[in-house]
Length: 156
Ligand SMILES: [Cu+2]
Image 1 (cartoon, rainbow, N blue to C red):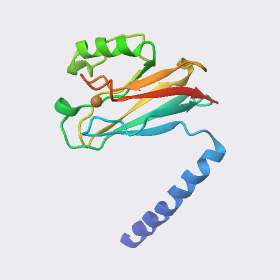
Image 2: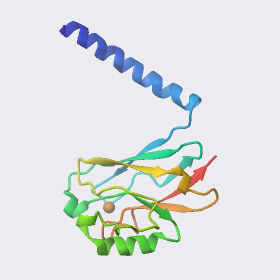
Image 3: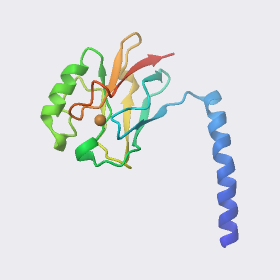
Image 4: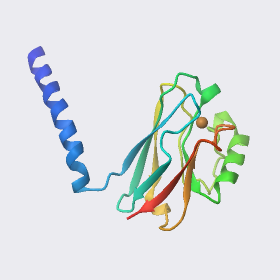
């Protein structure tokens, strides 16, 4: 029994990288991982969402150690022209609201706030993105958005 399980684990470890390598040839990659740190940074500065995706899934990882009350991060997407308003209203909404105003129509996607060692996922509905429009992703934790900001566009 133990021998069978370990053989399956070995086969699995070989099969998964092979699948990842062949995936881009078959379909657009509709997901990305964005890391965030105790140094108040996203390690990704730009994302291009393939227009053939229905949803684009972002996994936000906090690779640091600080708790979310001190160095929490979220991932919020909006038009570049809306980001300042989203951020100001988000900060006012407070920690219990994950720093996003309830029902904010300007928000295209928003994750919960994570602390060190945690991760979360958020879906971006691709139908809400227009070609040629400039979008940003930001962290709306108070004081973070001026540094924790990247660009997001709809690609081909
Ligand atoms: Cu942050």
